[in-house]
Length: 131
Image (tube, rainbow, N blue to C red; front, side, top):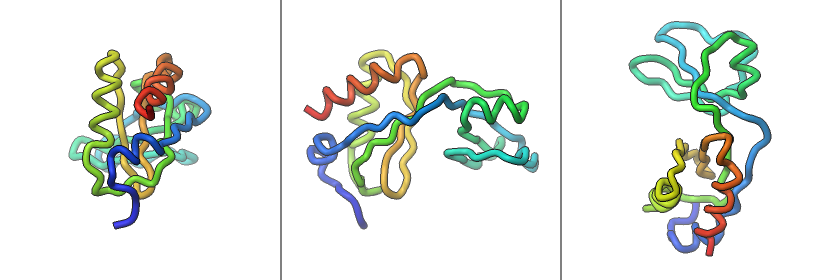
């Protein structure tokens, strides 16, 4: 399995990158087609429907009700999908400071969706974890 698994190396090596813009979570009922022109940054199919994480402007233009106004951060370190405790350490640190986070693990990197108004504080807290 490619990627780093050592928790200390992951924490020291991560380079959080804040993407521009704001995002929201939307849902489509099972079988409901997605409006044309959407470019979600993440999707997930659940029994209740398809979750889309979209730029806020795209959701508004498509007439989709978005919730959880957030910013998207990528943790630029190639973490293994088998790494133990990386996101647990990060989410616990943010939780200790009263910050919600919706993490997503992809093949190369982990991504965090955090409240838009707290994105700068999250960057500061991630720097604390880097040591």
